[in-house]
Image 1 (tube, protein in one colour):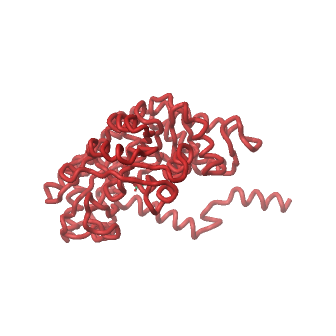
Image 2 (tube, protein in one colour):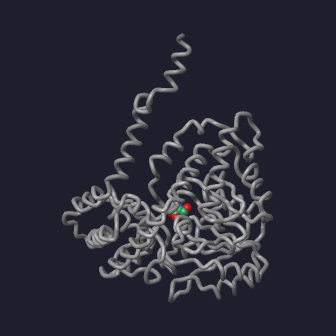
Length: 414
Ligand code: DSN
């Protein structure tokens, strides 16, 4: 029958066959990722298994609601995969907190938390975006800063680390409803115990946004916020090495409000294919190889910082405890110029403000360099020594054999 064969055709024809234009773009992005050094600290490379789950038929299913209590029929497999993701999330982070695996992103996870526990106009105290914080923690450009009243703490001018006494001083003054511990460009360990003590003293809730460090936390390579924070949010696609998305964990008392703030509060139907990918990534994160991977991520970041110091750059806070290095370009060029120069040689970093940066965010005095993605490709400390020297050579305008050296590192990574 013509009708049937047309249907079958639509369901089975390949992307390259149906849409060569998009197929080409995907292929070129695949090539760009393989032939370059991916050093953007918030990026990583998922496994083929995660990609298979994300590209599965689960994308077709509407499953509004929670497992076992959906608004649509036919959710038995959606329930299974979501319950699996929830159980694995608790196991990976060794926690009995409640979890919701439906947030589409870290920002939507944070917005749902704010909706759950605050009224418009309530106060948030978080790290200043210009000091390493995140847009969704009260930036005036984000809904979190438009609906709520934000105040910010920064880092100490000398140590360029969080000064917990200063956080406490501001918290006493501001009396926030929520204190946020979490950053997107902070190379040092975050100590959740003093944050919890401050929150308790001023009667605030502590939200730990561990998006950048979730993989390190899962592997025991960074202290855990569980047991300290009332609510923990994370993205799944950074050091955790899953598909794009978010998770929210909370103590029992906040369970009902958090679930309903995610759906129907801020989202409609969950992305079941993404949730399947999260489940796979969380299984991978429970394997011993994941611990070895996270140790290598940190070791690589340390070498990167050391060599850049040898090459005359200043590293914000003097080093790194995690997966990223914040490089002060010491006025030799702006972060924007460095980003462009490196990109021309297939090395991808992002311009970044450094603490107390005199330049605007369109220029920046620094770059942020991260090790998760290239460590996923198999690079070790020796390779990262070469990566750091390559970066320094390019920024110094020495382009001798740069293409070959980048190519060798990418080949190394195959
Ligand atoms: N955009 C991410 C980062 O680069 O850190 C945070 O959402």
